[in-house]
Length: 330
Image (cartoon, helix red, strand yellow):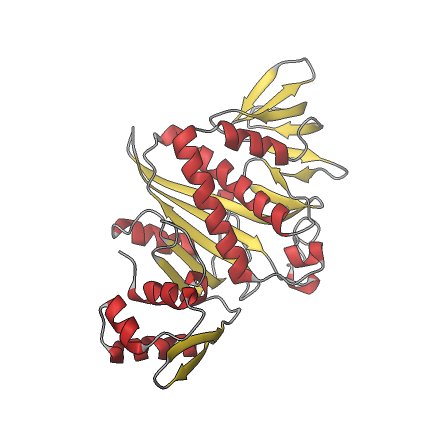
C-alpha cells in the first residue's frame, strides 16, 4: 500500500500548474487540513512550495538533500522503494533491514542512512560511512529462489552499480570478484549480502550497498587510501546523491525483474563485461594453497573460474586474489 505522502508527491510532480487543496483532498481521501500538514512537512525538507489563493499548490523547486521525500520525488519504480526509510545516523542499515524483515515488511523495502557508525563489509570488515558523503543503503528482497542461487544476487547488484557509474559519467568501472566496484584500480563501492533461509527456500535477503561518492582526499582513511577512492575523486565532479540513489534503485528493479523472468545468463554476460583482470594472470590464495592462474570468468552459481598454469580449470568460492607490486589483495 503506497503511503499518502508518496501519492501526494506523485500528484504534485505531474502538475505543471497549481492544484487546489480540495482536489488533493479528494484524490488522496484526506482532509484539507491533512493536505496542509503534508505541505508543511515538505517545506521542512527544503521544498519551495507556492501556495496561491483560489489556485492551490505548486512545487517551485526541490532540495538536493537525502530524505524520504526527495528520494520518492521522481522515483518511478513499481515495487522497490515503495516502503522507504531514511535515517540521519544509524549503526548499520543491514541491522535495521533484518529487523524490518522479521516484522514482515514487503519485498523492495529500502533503508538509507546519511551516516553509519558501524558499517560493515564482507568478512566483518569495517566500512567507513561518513555523514553525507556516500550511499549507505540496504534492500530487503524476498525472492522465490533456492538458497544456492543467493550469490547470483550479489553479482547482479555489482552489474547494476557498474552500469550506473558507466552511464552517468565518463568513468570506466570494473567489478572485482565477487562484489567490489573499482575505478582506476581503487575501490569505490562494495556489496554485502546476508540471507535468512531454510534448506530449500530463501525467507529473505538483505542486500547492503556502500558507495563512496563525494569524499575528498583527506576524507578517505589513510590506512586504505592506497586502495580506496570516491566517485568525486575519480571523476573530478560532485555527484547528486539523491539522484544517484534513484538511478540505482530504478536500474536494480529492471535488472532484477529481467533476472527473475529470464535467468542468470544476461547478468553473467554483464558481469564478465565489467570483470576486473578477466583474461589476466593473478596469484590466488585459498585455504589449501597459493597458485598463479588466469581469471576466465564466473560460473552460474557465482563461483570464480580460473585456469592454473597447468591448464586445470578451478572453481573458486572463497579466495584472496593478489596482483601487482606488493601484492594487492582482493
